[in-house]
Length: 446
Ligand code: GDP
Ligand code: ZN
Picture 1 (cartoon, rainbow, N blue to C red):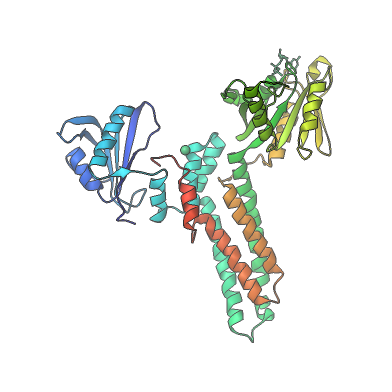
Picture 2 (picture 1 turned 30 degrees about the vertical axis):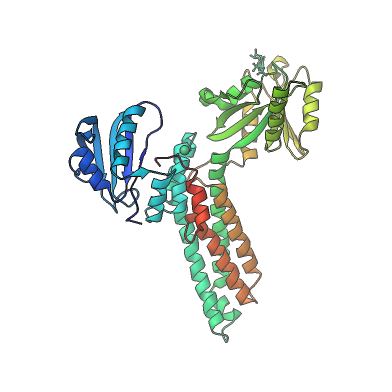
């Protein structure tokens, strides 16, 4: 891999900024540096330089950084040209690199090379995207923990434990006179149990990380003026600035997002769900129903003095039967009622005041609980659905294994499958199509 062709891309976000970075990686880096800078810069130190065109005229002036492989992000020779952050000037510098033999990098290709050259494993590579895309401080922190390898370390420890146990089992298989008593004496049962507990602990933390990434899809229902906006603002608390209407067409479903303790709550507003003949509006309505069918929870806001409106009931009747509903009776301050929460089967009633804030914490806690979030998010690392599935699969094989103590071939096979599933998280022995799938979701320049 160290001899791969040379790739280049603008690594900073599109648009204008104080600084813009062109990143180059591959075997032609020194020769490109020689032409653009007039010399190969001192490794690992900031060099102020002109970036020159083919007539030795400056295209820009900035800082050049040279990281000879293998001690670089990609493991190859890497050059970073930090110039002025304007789209035109960055394109000039990039074009110059391309003329000197680089080609435009594919999305995620720098990170992919880092992975292929063993600088990081697959879970770490994924956390590069998660860190960049993190929409809250908590999400960024947990992505950073994964990038540092904390998640991977737990997986490697589990894999170690599997290798240990499998050696015992395979050894027993090789010596037919040995049997279950031998395994028992060697503590195989306890080893399997401890693996089971460890997978379950990792799953718990990983699930928290996945909640930080995915959040909760919530359907918001209620008449005008019952206090929906006030309630969202109260829930978002300090982070009120994050309450945004995501622009679609005006007739499309209105989506908002707030964060509660870093957990994204995606809100689907049903305000647009009225009866209409308008074709465009109908498309928007259909889209809203599509999102509703994938939601985790519905919040119905009711003015406590007025009770449930007929049109709210109509929407409620059309919701999927499995969707939990929380009915919020708002404006209790006008009724001298105290805040309370009562749950019954699929429905929870919460009495609160979005104006005074009384009882809002009840809804706050209820939402986090529905999301599966445990408020002490200490040590949470970023994880993806793919990781959760792999951990679940490993757990299933371990449980099968535990029923096979009298069929050692089966036991060995189940342990092998469990370990293979864990290996797919960090990318050992991962299929090429999985790699392509993961890296193609990156932006260019990463
Ligand atoms: P929305 O149309 O459902 O989003 O409702 P708003 O949040 O815009 O609130 C409508 C009006 O009701 C505003 O004047 C709010 O100040 C008021 N309001 C909202 N919640 C409360 C509450 O708990 N108590 C009282 N007294 N007024 C409220
Ligand atoms: Zn991105």
